[in-house]
Length: 222
Image 1 (spheres, one colour):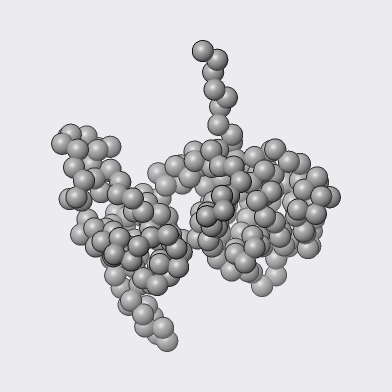
Image 2 (tube, rainbow, N blue to C red):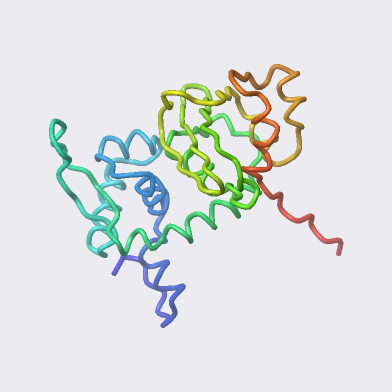
């Protein structure tokens, strides 16, 4: 059991006891992208104190959510990866990310985008029904962060780094969130110089349909 206890016989309270500590879900988020070394996790979570990262990993191991394994050579480094039990969190994490995306605005001065967070952002917002019949490889560059998405008839794979032969390269900053949320039209973002495209530019017109961010409902009047 984790340190936090609510004293309730309830699945939700038990889940919070296992993964409710600060930073824990972000560690799980990054491990859903793939196995990571301790240093990879530290770089991907620049605000986490090293002792907290160590404690959270120990808790996750103790609760059979994460295990350590040895990377195949030539690396041979120790990596952390989710267990089968840990991977069962994926639908909940994706749904939580989808819900939270609607509350995003522009990034604050102390907020960063990492390769793993951008991978998961695309996975959480992906709309399979809008991607039926779409076959494309997109490279997304957000500052120095680069990821690529392979869309194949309603299915999606997203990975850090650039692909060998993308159909479209999208270079964008914070305006990308506004495009995904329908606040800025794709053509206007390109015309205003906030987005640079290389390749099949017609694919960007579908981008907000493929990766929509649903805004929060308006606050009801009293």
